[in-house]
Image (cartoon, rainbow, N blue to C red; front, side):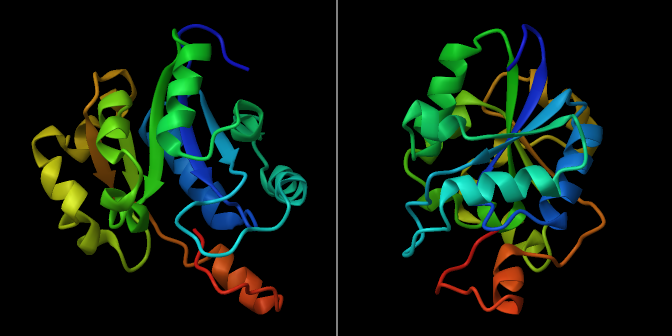
Length: 199
């Protein structure tokens, strides 16, 4: 899936379902971080969420239909690696692709809860992190516990294109034109809500 020297952004999530917001932040990430590819890591399930998502095969198919760029790769590599925790996924990917430059991508809403992720400090030490502003969470993300603990490694937005080749820990929060679309809103519209919040 990847050759030596590629710059790849990793966007993990339930993608239940994938939507225009995922596509929007992926395209922004490709441009602002100078990436060659963005991989959508369609997870088997999210340990922080009380109820499981739709079957992974359905979510993969929908994500592939939602993506309109050959530079955005939809993958079930977490299922194939047998990982459910981000720290384990990153370790597995770095073992398989040790000459690839990875950056972990997340919305600012996820930065707000990043300190609750399993081994989040290990993640921050493993790969640079690109944070993309999401509606309603940009300011909260700046003051989130993880952001405060990582503040000395934060880069200015002007250096976002250098992030992927930086030695971790390194992170940047970038502003972008925002879309309010979310998986939760889509499921509500479709009568599919299952009592959890997704991104």
